[in-house]
Length: 212
View 1 (cartoon, rainbow, N blue to C red):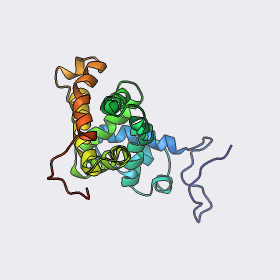
View 2: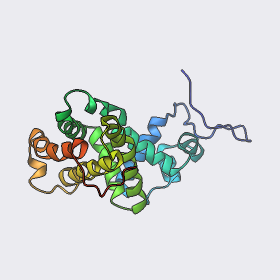
View 3: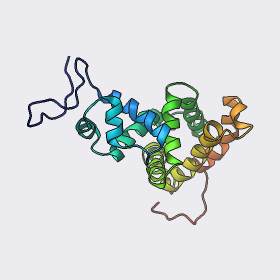
């Protein structure tokens, strides 16, 4: 079994390795997810994450390069963009339903919900985190879908869908705006799917730039 190590320092020690235990990237990700959920993006440092994970900060930088890189890894671990490829498979008129259902189902189970909550709670604390979350969801999760569909304005469509899904997640799972938290999942999908479908495949106003 291989053991992941930070670069060997001049002293001959191996920083970033727990005595007697394998230090993995997943340990750092798990701690980062928890710390971002508790303190928000700005309230967390690589040093504090390393301290709680019991590793040298050099190991965190070795895997993720920066706090921004670590937060992006947390987002990718939470959302799994590749899982949304199924949206463009099957009947086109049900794409909105498949996307809404797939997105919401991630929130209904653990540990996926905790990971997603960590990301959204960070996003509502500081503009920098909000910008990263918005760019990731639109660019990494939704834009591949809208480009694959082939309608005009794929970037604008991805942004519009993102406003619907992120707003819904905040209302149902974070702010808990009634009646959304107590509605059955299939009922929420039934309500939101037509709007998602329109943004994915319907006609959009000419106010959007053709290159978007």
